[in-house]
Image (cartoon, rainbow, N blue to C red; front, side, top):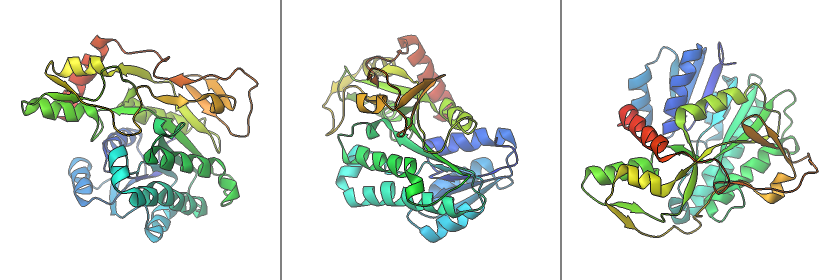
Length: 314
């Protein structure tokens, strides 16, 4: 699916963007366009990947003119751009809405107008499910905009869909690099609540899931991968025995929900994933897919993931 294609990655400068570029290059694409609003991020990508198969575009997802140009070149569009942190979203609510909602809608419209675009893939978050924060709400709205996209702009023959993930293990700004930095500087690691459980997936597996979805996703799908659970206490114990318990942030949950009961009546279970289709009713008993009922990683598996992260990224 990737061979000979031009792939546009919006928000390419983050952890997942880097891994995705690395994995795409194994499939001999025609070109990758790394689109990001952070100059240093693009510089670091250029130092790693060069310019033979990757081009670097310094632009913002709210810039419609730049999006029109970038999507005019692309076959596949991956939307990784977002204001991602709950606290930062609360500090800058207008910017959060501008980037996560307006920016994603701009990208969607540009992609649907482009004759070359075949697939549009939006990366969402578990916090979009029954949101309790501004950030979660700004991730849910684009899910519905894309699922109902034909009411916004016609896109005959194109496939636009959402993948709703939990957490990417070791991504920038997440708890793993944060705790490793605290430990490196001789500090106690700050644990918000030891009973928290988080659905996590290593970033190379995330990239593979995204690539595989190109072969089966239908227009308007909201796809939820089956992820395993990391117990935060296990993760903390693996990294350091010097710990301080703080408190959860506003809107932060002890358990994550990726499919709630209301959505479950529109959900079909497939191999390794759930697929939510708003125009579909399955007639089954409502259920929830959460970090409370999903399979967990063992403590030994968590330690292995931490060791691999340190080897690969630190």
